[in-house]
Every structure is written in structure tokens, then in C-alpha cells.
Image 1 (cartoon, helix red, strand yellow):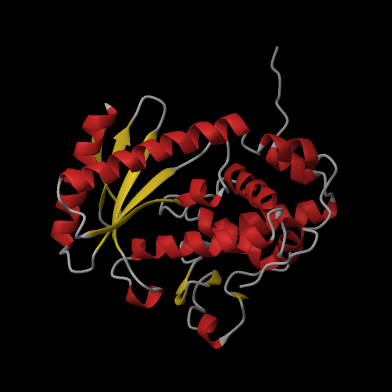
Image 2: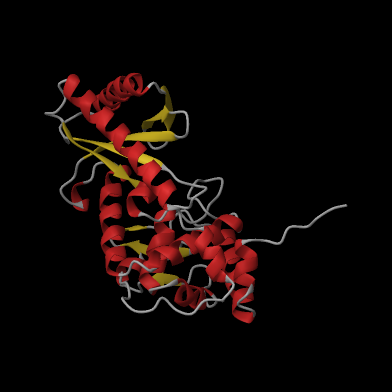
Length: 290
């Protein structure tokens, strides 16, 4: 993967106002960061009170808030509790539950257990929810135990790339809004679309949204390999292949279905014919009924 340190490319003039509305305000940013810090502090105190400092390696903010690529109307607060790899899978769940319960009591929050590849916990505060995800600490991606263990490496990769080219944050937010409005944003099975991390990777790889959309016009399901390498060809049955720069054994686009890919290609072709249509996709005109 690579990123460009130059201009992210010309975009429609109408995009400036749209893009500015996708940028979180300083008030929003400050409020969320303060609340995230409070939750992390409560979780860390719970670790100490339960005498678990020997098995908990870190409590860290992850996800789009940590990477500063979130949309004002759609932000996930993800806090990871990273455990020593010597803790059993069952112990991981139980200890994370105990820590989350203690923190919820301190914060006056309710607690809910949800399930993905393995259980995680949701602190339900008045203004928002915080997902508390138990994972194993790994010194490198080669030593991960479960898929979620990659997340801290994803966060580090994206933050480093964006530190070299902060202007890409704007393009990432615009691309995420485009995917959301096309209803192909999300790696859940019922969406079959582009995860937030994949959206970030694509903008970083191409060095900007304009360059990305220009190339998407030529995409064909089963014929897109980013980058085109022997490693990527191992996933040739997938509609879209984007090697995860953190773990090149993984296709970061594995969730993307053929239909989702074709929707993006169709939108890119329309935008190529008339660039102002990008703004229409981002903020569809409202129809008034008498």
C-alpha cells in the first residue's frame, strides 16, 4: 500500500460545502474525545481494582474515532481491552465482562452483551454507546489469535499514513458518505459492502478520492487485485481483492459482494460523465410534495 504526499486531486467545486459538513466540529470532536477518555479511565481503574494488571496489557481507543476518519452523524466508540495471550478464550470473555461491569457501575451506564466473532460488551451511556472489545495483545500481526487482534495494527497503519497526508481524511469522509448513500457501507453479511477500514485503505492506496474513482470506472468483478501480486491472486475467486497491508495473508475486501462492487462502478461511471453528480450522490435532492 502507498499514499501520496501531494494534492489529493481536483474535485467538483460543489463538493467544498458538502465536504465541510462531513467534517466534525471542534466541539463534537472535543466532547467525544473527553467522553472516550473518561470511559478508558474507568476501564483502567476497573482493571486495577480487580487485580488484573498482570494479564491486561492495554486499554486503548480503536476504530474511526482513533483514526479521525469518522462522520459527524456516524461515530463508533470502540475501546479494546488487550489481554495477555496466556489467558484462555473463556477467561477472556469472563474477565472482560467483569471489567466492563465494574466500569459501567462507576459511569452510571447500563451494560449489554452482544456477539460477533466472539462476545463483546456495550456500555450504554446517555448520549452514546461504547463497544468494549476483548482481544489478545500481539507483538506483530503474525502472532494474532483472533481476527479482532488485528485492529490495533489497522489503527496504527492508517494513522501513520494520514499523518503523512492529512488531506486524505477529507477524501475518506467523502468516500464513506458515498458508500453509505449507495447502501454498500459495512462488512456485515446483510450489507456485503465496504468496511470503514477498506474505505480508508482504498483512498490511501490511490492517494485521493479522484484517483480512486477514476480507476473504479475500469473495475470488473473478479479482475481487481490491489496490488497485483502473486499473494493477491490467491483470492482470485473474490469480486474484489485488496491485500491487507497489515497482514497480506488476508483480503481486506472479502466481504464485498459482486452487487456492491457493481453499484460503486456504476456510480463512478456516472460521476466520470458529469462530475457534479458526486455531490448529488452525497446529498440527494429533496423532493417536496404538496
